[in-house]
Amino acid sequence: MPRASVTRQINCNKKQLIDLVLDIEKYPEFVPFCLDAHVYENNQKGNLRF
Image 1 (cartoon, rainbow, N blue to C red):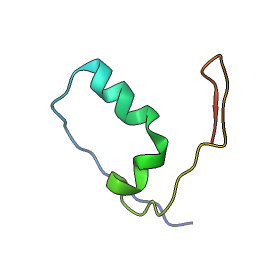
Image 2 (cartoon, one colour):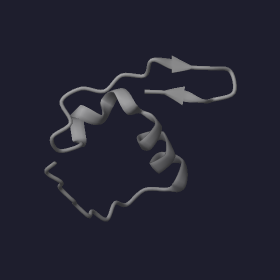
Image 3 (tube, rainbow, N blue to C red):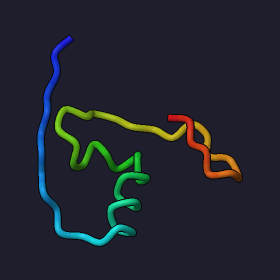
Image 4 (cartoon, helix red, strand yellow):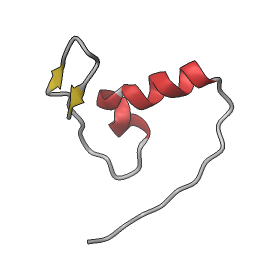
């Protein structure tokens, strides 16, 4: 299976970074080769199934 690796340094605070990582459905907008992303379940405990 092909693999790709990219390293970037971003200028943001911890909350902004966590918000970015948790916004899974927006991954296709900024993750190379990611064509689609969906959250199938988000329960009251904050657990995600994607």
